[in-house]
Length: 283
Image (tube, rainbow, N blue to C red; front, side, top):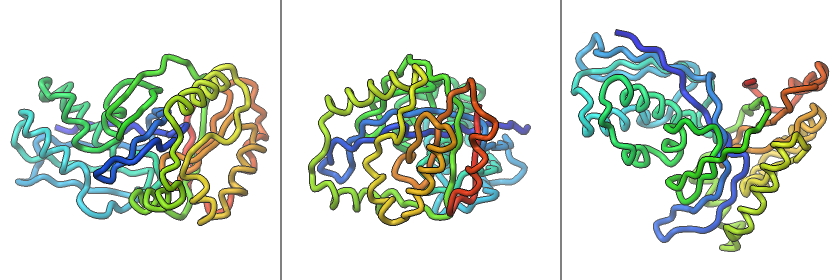
């Protein structure tokens, strides 16, 4: 039997780091936005072979694929111990801050929970990855805190479409946080400040106001390493975007547009953005 799944992706519309934990992890306060449809998976269950097999197309995944971690966790929850074969058609490379690996994991968990093993516990999701709990939920928008385990759905409707621009370079999470620690030196924003900032941004986007560059603590470091971001942000502003920013600690840039009253010529310069290898659009 073959099952075809669509994997979700996420944007960090805002991202503030509010502290560092003793074990080296960081507390975040971020506005997560979910969108669908750019990565797909084919699951063969049971597999024609004798062992689990995961194949990835378009972009390489270094190290062990997160899917094997998901399969191990699922089997501890009662998923049948029979081989599975999975083909992943990747539209997004690792190191871009879009949670594509976590989205693959969430798609597989959702399929298993709905059609194979309904008793799978929600607590399992956090053990797979920080973005997985959000991507396993149906929320289109949520305020996410802690290390990803505190998820508060946001009921505000954002009437926007968007695009994601993937540059040729990548941003490793560990290196990005190490650089941020050196830059911030413990001077993190308080949660109350972040909450007020987030509410202002949500109100602006919901009413169709131009908000501009969205706050992300990783932007200064990445702009310093890749000055091309300055030109990319200028192009997005000129394209009529309501807001634009950087997703996660990764390299991808996104823009949000009002769904109505867009000029057909507004986006003509997107393809001139320096260093961009792929653009994803959604409505």
